[in-house]
Image 1 (tube, chains in turn blue, orange):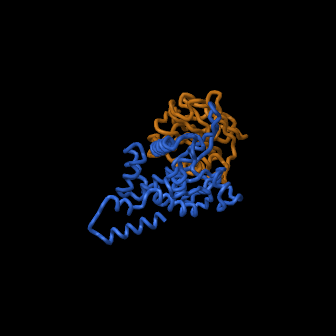
Image 2 (cartoon, chains in turn orange, red):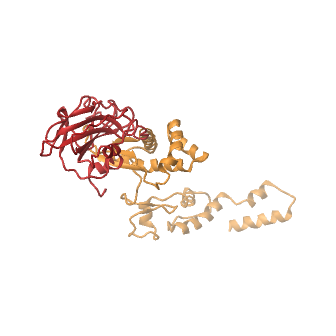
Length: 220
Length: 174
């Protein structure tokens, strides 16, 4: 009722046109309490949340702000599983807003973590590919050798294309400039006919200090 | 998993240095109490002097030729001088060792500078006592051409080991 009255006065002032006064303007603009009252109705329907908050239109209350912000933040999954009817109890993964899925187990995750945080992991792989391209054959642990295959193949593919843009992309990954230039010079004749599979891994004896399984990785 | 588990094939010795062959004679190479198995890792300090080579076989009248090459010289990513000849001994009677033969090219101890090198010891059977001439230089030696030149046929035994420079990583804790 207060909302309709506010709208009526708003239309009244617009039609009169010339005279503006703060009182009329303030009454024309929707008050924060009415905004809070109107929005949760849409948001509650969206989330399926049937919290029976007493949404009084008189005066702002903290519940209204809670209601207005429900739609933006992801709810506590335990809370949503218990209260909402849209997710059923057969689902074993939580639902994130953008459509991604989070399993409790490692199913389908193919990125090797190498027991390192992401920045250190990237630095390790960059260093290993630089050394492999420099020396041609290196000895490292099996997990690292099989993790770096992808990056070595990527570098050789960049060198096969040979354009300036690819060269600059390679310079951004490999730590030493000379190696990139040497790579771009010799890859076309060395790997021109070969499609993929530019590395070979040979497993070898474990390391004495910690019995880590080792492997040689070499350029084919 | 590779279909062929032969270490010589897996380590690409058969692809780079030799052609596929069947071993018929036993070959044992020992570097002062450390026996060489295919693909084992040795340090330059361990291979500084020539090893003890024991050849099997049965007849003392058959002679064998032993060749030691490095197919990864000067660096595995850039093998310009492939292969580098380290040792060449001919006229080795069966069941004896390399010290009983004629050393055409004297033993040079491996000193790899860049990367991990493979060192291959190959054994050929000679048809008779023949004079083998030493090549003019050690690098760019071709084992296949050498065998064809002196009618040695396909090899009868081979073994290889890896070696990197003394302070190389991946082996310092052994």
